[in-house]
Length: 339
Image (cartoon, rainbow, N blue to C red; front, side):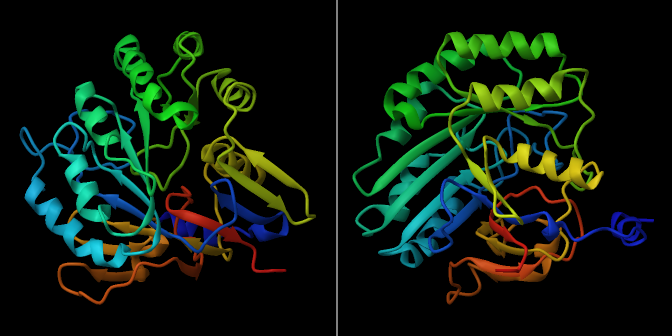
């Protein structure tokens, strides 16, 4: 018996009775082009807690070559002309192999766009690669890097962060997934190193691979430490909740929202069935364009950019069918449908 069957057997209260809006970002804005470009599955790491749950290794390098990725960028470029764009580039890991500056220049150089480009990375490439990427910024192109600490050499990782933050200033931030093997002692040790280096890092509750986005059962004290750290140490608000009674709550990590909803419902994941969901777009390595990345989005295949030159880049709206727990990836707004 699968996830959906088990959930349907239970009488579950409508989550919108408590929550009116759950929105990511610092403002409620669904009018930008929001595109998450999943360039490759390949990664030079093999983290046991990786939620992508794929075979990341194609020998020594990705099967998606630089030339192939550039061909995708050339197809996207005219769709971004004179548009306001929020673009996220990620894998796998893309910083160690690709010329990211070249890809971004194809997309935005002399394209009259107002764009913010964010790189998600494990920061394992030489510093010069990140410097080259950041140097492509200009008045209409804002570069962000969000490194994800993967329990590797913490001192080496922090040294790179210090270098990069000199370019990006206060907009710079890090993230770290906390999973079931993480002890409270180790977590505190790592957190203290980042604090002393003045590098902001957000810790998130880990979600188990191949599990409909269910949370790990963390070791004693770890969950409370994460919530308190994000609230008291990490100052940047990343998302918001508006409750049905009109009260509001800022959140410091998406996983904080998911954990609150999961705890309220009594599940080990956040379940948004029958809520209205507005999503950005997800572009996969084979060129498929989809509205978001959760199980419900399989029905909202939009186009393959190699095969359909008339594809459009815009937010999509649908009612959540509750096929799995939500991860808020690519979500802009979840709304209870009531005014």
